[in-house]
Length: 79
Image (tube, rainbow, N blue to C red; front, side, top):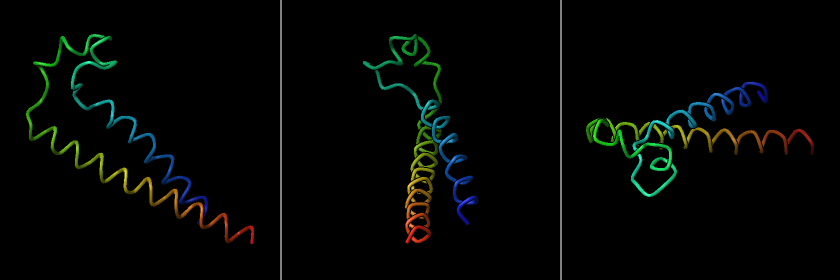
């Protein structure tokens, strides 16, 4: 069970990084410093951003749940 939860955590972490990097920059941050402001007019529609937000939040919930489950599994294993 610990191995399966660890795999879920690793996959969720990698997908979270990808999803966060796919978000459109809001301006004034690192995305503008590296040229994100140039392509901001070429970004997707608001529907795409809304769906990306939903996926990111859902994946964040899965990530948090796997961290909690993994912590409980390690606590019960050591006790």
